[in-house]
Length: 541
Image (tube, helix red, strand yellow):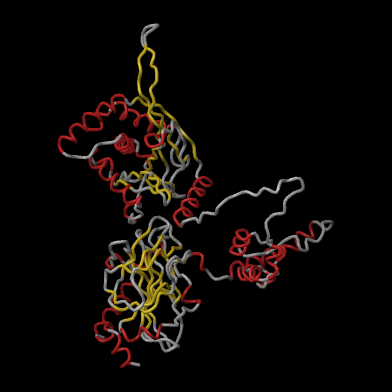
């Protein structure tokens, strides 16, 4: 065994140095600083180390995994407790890889590459396409594949030199849990053939960091508790009929699948604990002959015509799924209220015209009305910092940075790239960044740092679409979003009876989280914003 390891692993060849490094690493893991992350209730992920006499695995939590860079220096320090490894998730992203030096199936040393976590909200991802083929040599920094996350399509790079021995999840495969094995790499080219028929075991293919991969015992316990409570209900209401067949117990995953496939749970016999219907029962039912007879289109009522609706089913991308989930969560959990104000933009349009003349003379890019709106919103947030905050249950977090997310609609869905420190940047810089980020969003090439870390959002449907007024949904965990309508010409009464003039106005609506922003505070912010729009020279001071 020792000679096998020495021949196939450069890390083991320098055993004394490796042991020294491991000793230092363990000392850091068991230090008070490492343990403090648990007492501070910081987010952690846990991976159960497999107990086996034939396998030795080293888990490597890697942070800073983005499209163009994988930074091992950003790995967070963790702590070992009992037989569990605990490590903190970074604010950027992380991927779980596992190095195996031996296995029961006599496979040579190899590294299992897991689906990376590329954003704080990502729990699963899709493989857009592989750029490397099985057998290809890979070097650190080379792109292995493109992963479709909940935010964008991101390139996944190799961390080490070796050979791509096996692609476990191929092009187009969807809903792969974070941490699930997607590929195998080896150091020796001669070991590639040994992975031709490789299939990860169920324990290996599960995703340790993902919340959905918890053991199935809690649902069973819950069902058992619910079953135990049933006799109490029958005792309190002896006259009620016995609910035999009326109540169906099914796991959440089984209920979701049954709803998607239009499967009646009442016709399924559960094979789980105490008759619990599990996902496998639904899949078996769909594969059986009974599925074709019982799962059918709803029958037409008498008197209806034979004409059927003509339609197509459009696959939902991962980005749209997450957008839908987050917006639904926002509407259901955040107490929205809305404030609308009209602002004159005559002076703003005049200033914009003068600035664009200077920009054209110097070869710079033109400044848009939206650039001025972003700047005004950022300065108003600096003046009324209560609106630059988020709700955290036990406290309200007020941000010192003013980072403005800008809503951009693309064919792939809605993106909200961020302009960082917008209150400190000039109009020309803001305009250039907005153009670059909008282009990257439409090309589906945004990196996590391009959209994470916003503190407030601006959504403009006026200029591009001519919408006069609308109410936007708050982008959690933020507490406010500004909806900007189009400018329109209006008649303004003069001082005399028959005196009047024309002016241009825009309607803006501020959506607020009432837990964080009281009505008077929201009105104060709108007053400050309107002041900057109607007196735009003050933004240049």
